[in-house]
Image 1 (spheres, rainbow, N blue to C red):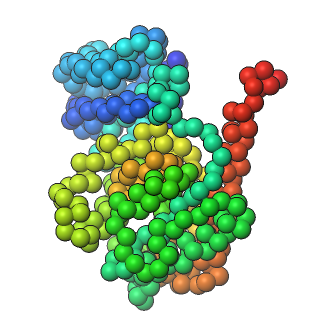
Image 2 (spheres, one colour):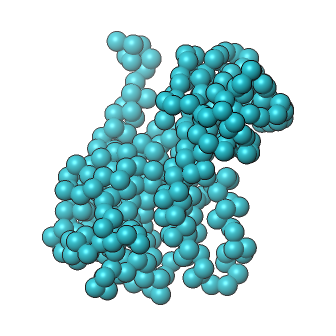
Image 3 (spheres, helix red, strand yellow):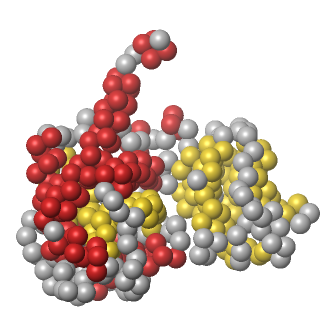
Length: 373
């Protein structure tokens, strides 16, 4: 991620001459406005100006016709696209107060994502992430019942692995973190995707962690990867993993999922808005703990459109604990000792996240004078 707050930022490399704009789209959330430029090839950018009235981002070598998009969401007034020689200039015009840019360059297809964060005082109070004590965590074992999930070379089923690991994590969290733990399933039953986060929302949970095992057509593929929800996938492989997990929708009772493209149609509205930044932080802390504790490949923290994370009114992540389709990893995942190691590694991540959260909680409780000292 490239962050900009009043100073130029440039992405490495440059867009080739003749790069065209395929689509410009935007979406307003309670705490930020997202602007996406989907292009025919990767582009470089430079933040030329951030001020009280507007922000300007020059996109090198991008050919695009001038246009104006009216936003008028109470924060961003409009987006203007202008020509600047061989480049394109994106002007973000504010209605009242200026925001802070958080810029991502994503691949497959190439995209420049501009997240314009509202100042905290401009975010409606009901839409802010409040720092309150962590009390309840929902642990979600993926798949179950007639949905086996991925199946390994010798028949080990994802639904079995993740239920066992999730139960182990639950016991450890209750014993060591003294949090209330809720399971979306505690047996081999099928739970529709939308019901999983609904449980967390009804119980006013503070965190949601969904545990899965991965699959890949290349049997040698291995490692751990952790996801948080976004309508913009990190890359094509992340999009494929999400599509694979979202395919469970087809196994739900008729009429529950409506149109077959439901996942695509809802993702813009379920990108967790104010919880996205906190979800990314949770993903990074847990992922670091798991990969540092275990001798396993680190496939990174990624973002993608997972239906199971959609609608969660709290920080939410999906952890892929290994590839059951890899014979070596399947053998490890079958081992009760390794499952215990996995559970302890996840606990380590949750422990560190809670430590950081409690630290921020104490800071938010301190009077301003004490914080200045």
